[in-house]
Image (cartoon, rainbow, N blue to C red; front, side, top):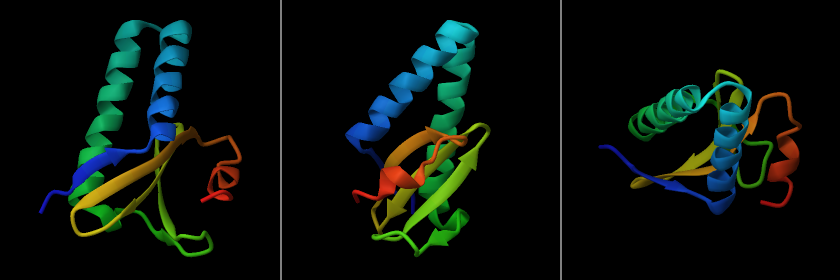
Length: 100
C-alpha cells in the first residue's frame, strides 16, 4: 500500500530554500531536476517507509534518509508518511528534532 505523503510546513520551507539556493547557484533546470528527484524519494519512502533506520534516540523516534546532500527526516503510520524536515546534511539537523 502506498502511503499518502504529508509535508510539514517546515519541510515545505526547507524545499523552497533548496529551490532558491539551487536556482541561484546553478540554474532553474537543475533546481527542477533536484526537486523532482526529492519527490521521487518521497514516493519511494511512501512505498518502503522502513527503508531508513529507526532513530529511537529522538522523541518521538524518527527515520533519517540521506539523499545526495540532504537529509530527509520523517515518521510514518499505516496510511501516511510525514516529512518533518529536509535539511542539508552538513547542518546540525538534530537540533531541529529537539523541539519535537
